[in-house]
Image (cartoon, rainbow, N blue to C red; front, side, top):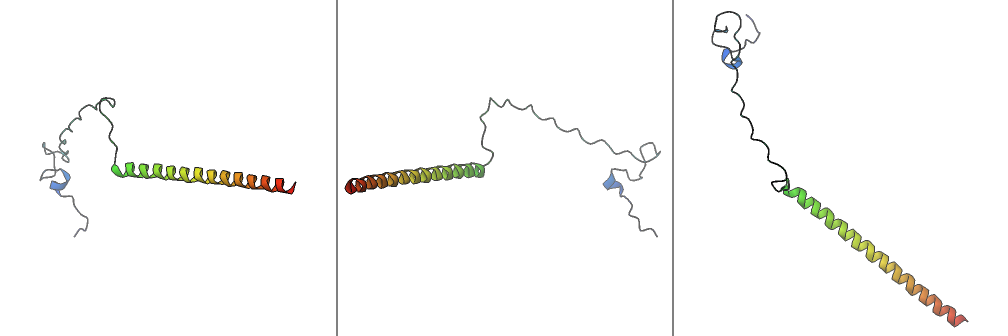
Length: 100
């Protein structure tokens, strides 16, 4: 008794006898159907490019909004520091006038 698994003719492309049409040697598998040719690609300039996915657009938008928020906070912080420095200079000038 053999424990080697034998190929089944219907799963391997062989006919039921396992021989080719002439009865000589192993059967050759029948050629598969020809694949359908694709239509030629359209010119990229002729059709507008759509975003690939909506989540990518959302992530990009959130990143831009985050950069805008960081920029606004940074500029307002610099403006606040400049304003405080100007107030300090004015106060120092007033004190130096009083001391004279």
